[in-house]
Length: 324
Image (cartoon, rainbow, N blue to C red):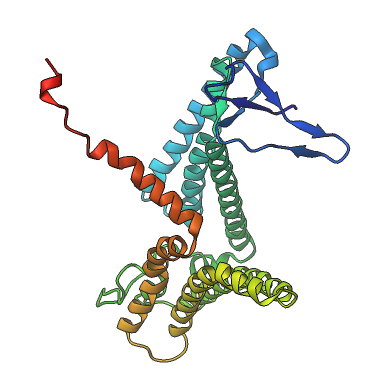
């Protein structure tokens, strides 16, 4: 299938579709980035007048998807007889299916009704993001449902003990944090939370270590390259990386401390809250300040943007004598 670019800049004709040059041997696509270019969705344009038949079929299918899954969610939440974990997973899967299909089918329906279907580059990537994330979430729910069936068939006597949906909480119901932090809420559970602790710690370790190793590898390679540079080039390279290193150090250091503090040492809740603020609020606060102060191009762009608002905000007063 051939992919087109649609140029919507004022100086280009509206009918000009620019095919991307494709190397069929290597499978690569050469794309020249332009700020005012959107993607042209080819879709099923070859069907011609038959598109309306497909539109009706697809619309009926989408209505059935919305209605059927909404009904499952409603009865699972309101009927007390459907309280088993299987229906809990099923209702979550139905919700994911509704959102999952909504990211694609409405666009397909509009494409069947219009002669030209375009989408902006940010919109295209946003659609891909939700499509992939919801697809992964749906597969994860199906995996948990498979484990639920395994326990029900292979170990039925322990099913109610293993697949427990409700979770009791012990008083006083005080979350010792400034927001609903998972580790703080977990401490209010009356039952055994060892499995939750392992899963939470494993997820945090994978998240922090994977990205941390990639960042460390990048700076090791930067250090190797800097060893071959002159003094002036080294200073320039250090200035380029300093802002990013500051943000990374604050973010990873504070996040690691919070996860470790719940399991090692007897730290007060106040200390955890203060450190949590470092990676949840201080890092986003420092990002624009650090990068704008140390980046000359960004400073000049901000200055140009601010100066463009001045004539509109302060308009010169007209001479009354000239208006008659």
